[in-house]
Length: 345
Image (tube, rainbow, N blue to C red; front, side):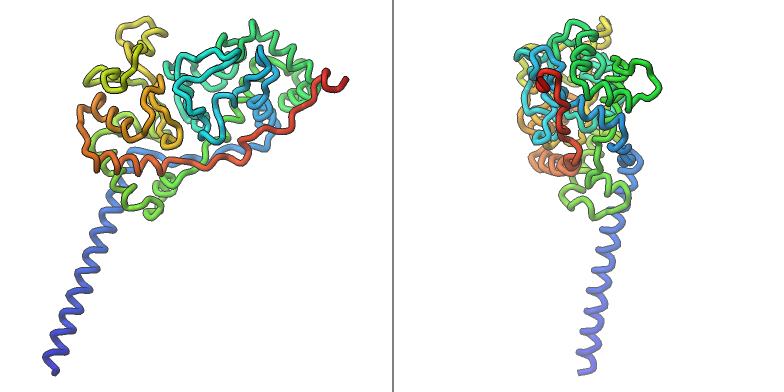
Protein backbone atom coordinates (compact mmCIF):
# COMPACT_ATOMS: atom_id res chain seq x y z
CA UNK A 1 0.00 0.00 0.00
CA UNK A 2 2.75 2.40 1.02
CA UNK A 3 4.80 1.45 -2.07
CA UNK A 4 1.80 2.08 -4.29
CA UNK A 5 1.31 5.51 -2.76
CA UNK A 6 4.99 6.34 -3.21
CA UNK A 7 4.95 5.21 -6.84
CA UNK A 8 1.81 7.23 -7.52
CA UNK A 9 3.39 10.25 -5.90
CA UNK A 10 6.52 9.85 -8.01
CA UNK A 11 4.44 9.52 -11.16
CA UNK A 12 2.52 12.65 -10.18
CA UNK A 13 5.71 14.59 -9.50
CA UNK A 14 7.17 13.43 -12.82
CA UNK A 15 4.04 14.49 -14.71
CA UNK A 16 4.08 17.86 -12.99
CA UNK A 17 7.74 18.20 -13.87
CA UNK A 18 7.00 17.45 -17.51
CA UNK A 19 4.21 20.08 -17.51
CA UNK A 20 6.51 22.67 -15.97
CA UNK A 21 9.19 21.84 -18.51
CA UNK A 22 6.69 22.08 -21.36
CA UNK A 23 5.44 25.42 -20.05
CA UNK A 24 9.02 26.64 -19.72
CA UNK A 25 9.74 25.64 -23.32
CA UNK A 26 6.57 27.36 -24.49
CA UNK A 27 7.41 30.49 -22.51
CA UNK A 28 10.93 30.40 -23.93
CA UNK A 29 9.58 30.08 -27.45
CA UNK A 30 7.26 33.05 -26.89
CA UNK A 31 10.11 35.07 -25.44
CA UNK A 32 12.37 34.26 -28.39
CA UNK A 33 9.68 35.19 -30.92
CA UNK A 34 8.88 38.41 -29.08
CA UNK A 35 12.58 39.28 -28.90
CA UNK A 36 13.01 38.72 -32.64
CA UNK A 37 9.86 40.70 -33.40
CA UNK A 38 10.99 43.65 -31.27
CA UNK A 39 14.32 43.65 -33.07
CA UNK A 40 12.68 43.81 -36.51
CA UNK A 41 9.46 45.77 -35.98
CA UNK A 42 8.29 48.66 -33.82
CA UNK A 43 4.93 49.23 -32.15
CA UNK A 44 2.71 52.02 -33.38
CA UNK A 45 3.30 55.30 -31.53
CA UNK A 46 0.33 57.15 -30.09
CA UNK A 47 -1.61 59.03 -32.76
CA UNK A 48 -1.93 62.82 -32.45
CA UNK A 49 -5.26 64.28 -31.37
CA UNK A 50 -8.04 64.47 -33.92
CA UNK A 51 -9.70 67.31 -32.01
CA UNK A 52 -7.44 70.18 -33.06
CA UNK A 53 -8.66 72.91 -35.41
CA UNK A 54 -6.28 71.77 -38.15
CA UNK A 55 -7.30 68.12 -37.82
CA UNK A 56 -10.98 69.04 -37.94
CA UNK A 57 -10.43 71.17 -41.05
CA UNK A 58 -8.49 68.30 -42.64
CA UNK A 59 -11.36 65.94 -41.84
CA UNK A 60 -13.81 68.28 -43.57
CA UNK A 61 -11.58 68.60 -46.62
CA UNK A 62 -11.02 64.84 -46.82
CA UNK A 63 -14.74 64.20 -47.33
CA UNK A 64 -15.48 67.35 -49.38
CA UNK A 65 -16.71 66.64 -52.94
CA UNK A 66 -17.58 70.18 -54.05
CA UNK A 67 -13.99 71.10 -54.94
CA UNK A 68 -13.73 68.45 -57.66
CA UNK A 69 -14.43 69.27 -61.30
CA UNK A 70 -17.57 67.13 -61.39
CA UNK A 71 -18.66 67.74 -57.80
CA UNK A 72 -18.55 64.03 -56.96
CA UNK A 73 -14.97 63.24 -55.93
CA UNK A 74 -13.32 63.71 -52.55
CA UNK A 75 -10.22 62.17 -50.97
CA UNK A 76 -12.54 59.64 -49.35
CA UNK A 77 -13.79 58.55 -52.79
CA UNK A 78 -10.92 56.04 -53.05
CA UNK A 79 -10.62 55.37 -49.30
CA UNK A 80 -13.80 53.87 -47.87
CA UNK A 81 -14.39 52.98 -44.20
CA UNK A 82 -15.95 49.62 -45.07
CA UNK A 83 -12.86 48.77 -47.17
CA UNK A 84 -10.42 49.60 -44.37
CA UNK A 85 -9.41 52.89 -46.00
CA UNK A 86 -9.04 51.47 -49.53
CA UNK A 87 -11.74 50.97 -52.18
CA UNK A 88 -11.70 47.29 -53.15
CA UNK A 89 -11.03 48.00 -56.82
CA UNK A 90 -8.04 46.89 -58.91
CA UNK A 91 -7.61 50.50 -60.05
CA UNK A 92 -9.56 53.41 -58.64
CA UNK A 93 -11.64 55.80 -60.68
CA UNK A 94 -11.69 59.54 -60.18
CA UNK A 95 -13.32 62.58 -61.71
CA UNK A 96 -15.77 61.91 -64.57
CA UNK A 97 -15.12 58.19 -64.12
CA UNK A 98 -11.51 58.35 -65.28
CA UNK A 99 -9.42 55.32 -64.25
CA UNK A 100 -6.32 55.80 -62.12
CA UNK A 101 -3.19 54.02 -63.36
CA UNK A 102 -2.63 52.17 -60.07
CA UNK A 103 -4.40 50.60 -57.12
CA UNK A 104 -5.36 52.83 -54.17
CA UNK A 105 -3.69 51.62 -50.96
CA UNK A 106 -5.33 52.15 -47.59
CA UNK A 107 -5.05 55.69 -46.24
CA UNK A 108 -5.05 54.46 -42.64
CA UNK A 109 -1.26 54.05 -42.47
CA UNK A 110 -0.11 56.41 -45.25
CA UNK A 111 1.35 58.76 -42.62
CA UNK A 112 3.77 56.03 -41.47
CA UNK A 113 5.45 55.71 -44.87
CA UNK A 114 8.56 57.43 -46.15
CA UNK A 115 7.03 58.62 -49.43
CA UNK A 116 3.61 58.74 -51.05
CA UNK A 117 2.35 56.80 -54.09
CA UNK A 118 3.52 53.44 -55.43
CA UNK A 119 6.38 55.08 -57.34
CA UNK A 120 7.33 57.48 -54.57
CA UNK A 121 6.74 60.51 -56.76
CA UNK A 122 5.41 62.50 -53.80
CA UNK A 123 7.74 63.16 -50.89
CA UNK A 124 5.08 63.47 -48.19
CA UNK A 125 1.38 63.00 -47.63
CA UNK A 126 1.12 66.80 -47.52
CA UNK A 127 2.61 67.12 -51.01
CA UNK A 128 0.31 64.38 -52.24
CA UNK A 129 -2.67 66.23 -50.78
CA UNK A 130 -1.58 69.56 -52.29
CA UNK A 131 -1.34 68.12 -55.80
CA UNK A 132 -4.43 65.90 -55.87
CA UNK A 133 -6.94 68.70 -56.62
CA UNK A 134 -5.18 69.49 -59.89
CA UNK A 135 -4.63 65.86 -60.89
CA UNK A 136 -6.29 65.13 -64.21
CA UNK A 137 -7.72 61.84 -62.94
CA UNK A 138 -8.26 62.63 -59.27
CA UNK A 139 -10.07 66.00 -58.90
CA UNK A 140 -9.60 67.41 -62.39
CA UNK A 141 -9.20 71.12 -61.61
CA UNK A 142 -7.11 73.17 -64.09
CA UNK A 143 -5.20 74.97 -61.31
CA UNK A 144 -5.34 75.51 -57.56
CA UNK A 145 -6.81 78.99 -57.95
CA UNK A 146 -9.97 77.21 -59.07
CA UNK A 147 -9.94 75.12 -55.89
CA UNK A 148 -9.49 78.20 -53.71
CA UNK A 149 -12.37 79.94 -55.45
CA UNK A 150 -14.62 76.95 -54.78
CA UNK A 151 -13.59 76.83 -51.11
CA UNK A 152 -14.22 80.54 -50.66
CA UNK A 153 -17.66 80.16 -52.20
CA UNK A 154 -18.53 78.02 -49.18
CA UNK A 155 -18.49 80.58 -46.33
CA UNK A 156 -17.79 78.11 -43.56
CA UNK A 157 -14.39 77.29 -45.01
CA UNK A 158 -13.08 80.85 -44.81
CA UNK A 159 -13.72 80.81 -41.06
CA UNK A 160 -12.41 77.25 -40.60
CA UNK A 161 -9.11 78.03 -42.37
CA UNK A 162 -8.72 81.22 -40.30
CA UNK A 163 -9.31 79.24 -37.10
CA UNK A 164 -6.86 76.50 -38.12
CA UNK A 165 -4.18 78.93 -39.30
CA UNK A 166 -4.56 82.03 -37.11
CA UNK A 167 -2.62 85.18 -37.88
CA UNK A 168 -2.47 84.61 -41.65
CA UNK A 169 -3.94 87.36 -43.79
CA UNK A 170 -5.37 84.89 -46.32
CA UNK A 171 -5.13 81.33 -44.92
CA UNK A 172 -7.09 79.62 -47.73
CA UNK A 173 -4.01 78.41 -49.62
CA UNK A 174 -2.74 75.31 -51.35
CA UNK A 175 -0.08 74.84 -48.66
CA UNK A 176 -2.64 74.98 -45.86
CA UNK A 177 -4.95 72.61 -47.74
CA UNK A 178 -2.13 70.05 -47.78
CA UNK A 179 -1.11 70.71 -44.20
CA UNK A 180 -4.62 70.30 -42.81
CA UNK A 181 -5.14 67.04 -44.67
CA UNK A 182 -1.76 65.78 -43.49
CA UNK A 183 -2.63 66.57 -39.87
CA UNK A 184 -5.89 64.64 -40.21
CA UNK A 185 -4.31 61.65 -41.95
CA UNK A 186 -1.72 61.39 -39.18
CA UNK A 187 -4.53 60.72 -36.71
CA UNK A 188 -5.78 57.65 -38.58
CA UNK A 189 -3.31 54.84 -37.67
CA UNK A 190 -4.68 52.81 -34.74
CA UNK A 191 -2.99 50.03 -32.72
CA UNK A 192 -3.55 46.40 -33.66
CA UNK A 193 -3.18 43.13 -31.79
CA UNK A 194 0.33 42.90 -33.23
CA UNK A 195 1.18 46.20 -31.54
CA UNK A 196 -0.06 44.73 -28.25
CA UNK A 197 2.22 41.75 -28.85
CA UNK A 198 5.20 44.01 -29.53
CA UNK A 199 4.40 45.84 -26.31
CA UNK A 200 4.81 42.60 -24.38
CA UNK A 201 1.42 40.87 -24.44
CA UNK A 202 2.39 37.41 -25.73
CA UNK A 203 -1.26 36.31 -25.70
CA UNK A 204 -2.32 39.09 -28.08
CA UNK A 205 -1.54 36.74 -30.98
CA UNK A 206 -3.07 33.29 -31.29
CA UNK A 207 -0.74 30.26 -31.58
CA UNK A 208 -1.53 30.13 -35.32
CA UNK A 209 -0.65 33.82 -35.74
CA UNK A 210 2.56 33.37 -33.79
CA UNK A 211 3.49 30.45 -36.03
CA UNK A 212 2.81 32.68 -39.03
CA UNK A 213 4.97 35.46 -37.60
CA UNK A 214 7.82 32.99 -37.08
CA UNK A 215 7.51 31.80 -40.68
CA UNK A 216 7.27 35.42 -41.92
CA UNK A 217 10.56 36.16 -40.17
CA UNK A 218 12.38 32.96 -41.03
CA UNK A 219 11.72 32.88 -44.79
CA UNK A 220 12.88 36.48 -45.20
CA UNK A 221 9.72 38.59 -45.69
CA UNK A 222 11.16 40.97 -43.11
CA UNK A 223 13.95 41.94 -45.50
CA UNK A 224 11.44 44.44 -46.91
CA UNK A 225 8.51 44.41 -44.50
CA UNK A 226 9.87 45.69 -41.22
CA UNK A 227 9.71 48.72 -38.95
CA UNK A 228 6.62 50.38 -37.56
CA UNK A 229 4.75 50.16 -40.87
CA UNK A 230 5.74 46.54 -41.57
CA UNK A 231 6.90 48.03 -44.86
CA UNK A 232 6.47 51.42 -46.47
CA UNK A 233 9.99 52.62 -45.66
CA UNK A 234 11.99 51.70 -48.76
CA UNK A 235 11.91 50.94 -52.49
CA UNK A 236 12.39 47.45 -53.91
CA UNK A 237 12.23 45.76 -57.27
CA UNK A 238 9.05 43.77 -57.76
CA UNK A 239 10.31 40.53 -59.24
CA UNK A 240 13.79 39.95 -57.81
CA UNK A 241 13.91 36.27 -58.75
CA UNK A 242 11.58 36.25 -61.76
CA UNK A 243 9.33 38.65 -63.66
CA UNK A 244 6.38 39.51 -61.44
CA UNK A 245 3.75 39.42 -64.20
CA UNK A 246 4.38 35.71 -64.81
CA UNK A 247 2.84 35.02 -61.40
CA UNK A 248 0.35 37.89 -61.07
CA UNK A 249 -1.03 37.58 -64.59
CA UNK A 250 -0.63 41.32 -65.15
CA UNK A 251 -1.39 42.14 -68.78
CA UNK A 252 0.59 45.37 -69.05
CA UNK A 253 3.75 45.40 -66.87
CA UNK A 254 4.27 48.73 -65.11
CA UNK A 255 7.83 50.11 -65.27
CA UNK A 256 7.40 51.53 -61.79
CA UNK A 257 9.81 54.13 -60.49
CA UNK A 258 11.78 54.10 -63.76
CA UNK A 259 9.07 56.29 -65.27
CA UNK A 260 9.80 58.87 -62.57
CA UNK A 261 13.61 58.77 -62.44
CA UNK A 262 14.22 57.78 -66.11
CA UNK A 263 16.84 55.34 -64.81
CA UNK A 264 17.07 51.70 -65.90
CA UNK A 265 18.17 50.87 -62.36
CA UNK A 266 14.62 51.67 -61.21
CA UNK A 267 12.87 49.39 -63.70
CA UNK A 268 9.99 47.59 -61.93
CA UNK A 269 10.92 49.28 -58.65
CA UNK A 270 8.05 50.31 -56.37
CA UNK A 271 7.63 51.50 -52.82
CA UNK A 272 7.36 48.48 -50.55
CA UNK A 273 3.76 48.61 -49.30
CA UNK A 274 2.97 48.67 -45.62
CA UNK A 275 1.25 45.45 -44.57
CA UNK A 276 -0.86 47.09 -41.90
CA UNK A 277 -4.53 46.36 -42.69
CA UNK A 278 -3.49 44.13 -45.60
CA UNK A 279 -6.01 41.39 -44.80
CA UNK A 280 -8.86 43.81 -45.57
CA UNK A 281 -7.48 45.83 -48.49
CA UNK A 282 -7.42 43.57 -51.53
CA UNK A 283 -7.06 43.32 -54.44
CA UNK A 284 -3.28 43.46 -54.19
CA UNK A 285 -0.18 44.92 -55.81
CA UNK A 286 0.13 48.19 -57.70
CA UNK A 287 -2.26 46.98 -60.39
CA UNK A 288 -4.74 45.08 -58.23
CA UNK A 289 -3.91 41.97 -60.24
CA UNK A 290 -4.37 39.41 -57.44
CA UNK A 291 -7.65 39.25 -55.56
CA UNK A 292 -6.90 36.91 -52.66
CA UNK A 293 -4.36 37.34 -49.85
CA UNK A 294 -3.15 33.71 -49.75
CA UNK A 295 -2.23 33.85 -53.44
CA UNK A 296 -0.54 37.20 -52.85
CA UNK A 297 1.61 35.63 -50.12
CA UNK A 298 2.55 32.79 -52.44
CA UNK A 299 3.40 35.16 -55.33
CA UNK A 300 5.60 37.35 -53.13
CA UNK A 301 7.52 34.40 -51.74
CA UNK A 302 8.20 33.10 -55.23
CA UNK A 303 9.11 36.26 -57.15
CA UNK A 304 10.96 38.01 -54.32
CA UNK A 305 12.56 35.14 -52.38
CA UNK A 306 12.52 32.21 -54.78
CA UNK A 307 10.53 30.20 -52.24
CA UNK A 308 7.70 27.79 -53.02
CA UNK A 309 5.57 27.85 -49.90
CA UNK A 310 3.51 24.91 -48.71
CA UNK A 311 -0.20 25.36 -48.11
CA UNK A 312 0.54 25.21 -44.38
CA UNK A 313 3.11 28.02 -44.68
CA UNK A 314 0.69 30.20 -46.65
CA UNK A 315 -2.08 29.56 -44.14
CA UNK A 316 0.21 30.48 -41.25
CA UNK A 317 1.49 33.71 -42.78
CA UNK A 318 -2.02 34.73 -43.81
CA UNK A 319 -3.16 34.18 -40.22
CA UNK A 320 -0.40 36.46 -38.94
CA UNK A 321 -1.28 39.17 -41.46
CA UNK A 322 -4.82 39.17 -40.09
CA UNK A 323 -3.44 40.44 -36.78
CA UNK A 324 -2.33 43.66 -38.51
CA UNK A 325 -5.90 44.92 -38.94
CA UNK A 326 -6.74 48.07 -36.99
CA UNK A 327 -10.18 49.31 -35.96
CA UNK A 328 -11.75 51.94 -38.20
CA UNK A 329 -11.18 55.28 -36.40
CA UNK A 330 -14.32 56.76 -34.88
CA UNK A 331 -13.54 60.07 -36.58
CA UNK A 332 -13.20 58.52 -40.05
CA UNK A 333 -16.48 60.00 -41.28
CA UNK A 334 -17.76 63.24 -42.73
CA UNK A 335 -18.80 66.11 -40.54
CA UNK A 336 -22.01 67.95 -41.38
CA UNK A 337 -21.06 69.84 -44.56
CA UNK A 338 -20.88 73.62 -44.58
CA UNK A 339 -23.75 75.07 -46.66
CA UNK A 340 -22.65 76.89 -49.78
CA UNK A 341 -23.99 80.16 -51.17
CA UNK A 342 -26.31 78.39 -53.60
CA UNK A 343 -27.88 76.40 -50.80
CA UNK A 344 -28.52 79.56 -48.80
CA UNK A 345 -30.46 81.32 -51.58
